[in-house]
Length: 97
Image 1 (spheres, one colour):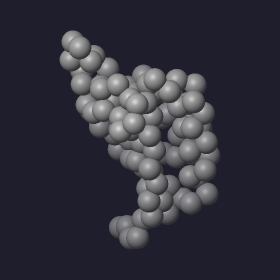
Image 2: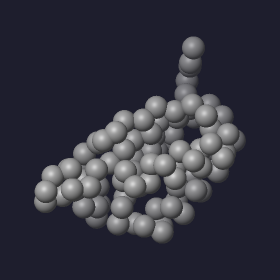
Image 3: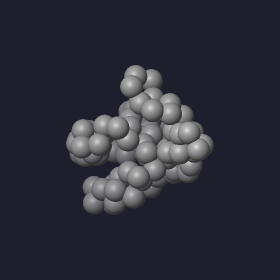
Image 4: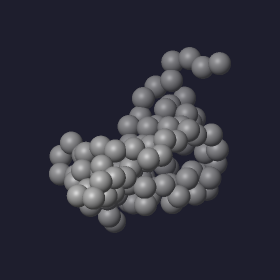
């Protein structure tokens, strides 16, 4: 199993969760809203007057075969709107209960 951690502009949240449903990825936890700044070229998302955008985060644990489908969707979404910012990180699940 794998964990996928996604950070994204709040505008992407519903598109991502809809795609997860389409890919039969049911379980997830999310945090809304989050603030932050991209590590390379992203604008700050602070929810302030100067930087009004906000982020969301989603974490899900999936079967190994589900990873590529979700990552492919996320990559295409990020390429369509790179100014919004979207990142995804995958790591192994060693144990679960």
